[in-house]
Image (cartoon, rainbow, N blue to C red; front, side, top):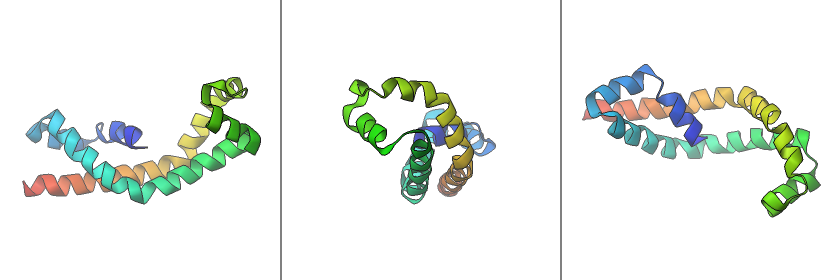
Length: 116
């Protein structure tokens, strides 16, 4: 969630304004710190959406195998074949969470930037 959130944040006017004054690297650090803080608020919802989507495509046995056996799981090929579909579903159901997460993080980062 944080990696995706940072990618979205970096495409905003708010980030561009901070980067123009602080430099790209410092703006990225400032926003990343806020994303770390805000993650605790949004991660549970994000994880619940992931679980719902994956449970529509895999049985509990398959999920347990993927989690415990990783690349050795006999369901790895199924995971690969469903990845695009799962990704699209996760994106659809989690877009509002990502938007709120990025917005909250940018607002906090901008407030700190403005006080500098």
